[in-house]
Length: 184
Image 1 (cartoon, rainbow, N blue to C red):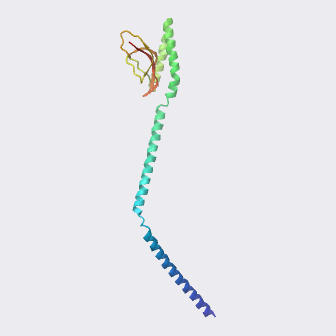
Image 2: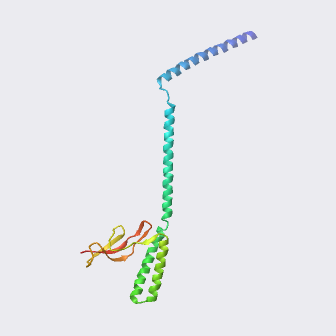
Image 3: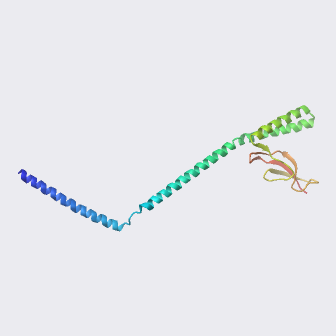
């Protein structure tokens, strides 16, 4: 009986091996048929495509990083701009007090105000804040013409009077100078 069981088992193992062999053959035939239907995959092209995508992404990242560094540097460079704008009315008030003191004949007060204004302009210049020059030529980028007046002996468009000084911070204009220009 043991021999019969062994032979039956051996027969079953043999049948399973035959079925596996038939399955493998069918699988190989199916794989070959599928391989014939699909074109072969070009791994070199896929690699080049992935490499190109990586390089572009890396370049975009580096550009964004440089742009943020530049923005940060600009923010630090022009950090005093807000406080400079807040100080301009104080300087205007000192100029008005100086002209008033000169009109009243208060020489001591006028000298004190002149020294204060001089020191204030030195401190502002130290931080890159300077007055806008108001020569004879009108520059719309630096001056704001608030009126036109008849002026003998001056060409049309020249600055006649400065009402309020203008200031610039490094290369940026904080406030244009308010002027009147000649109209003939």
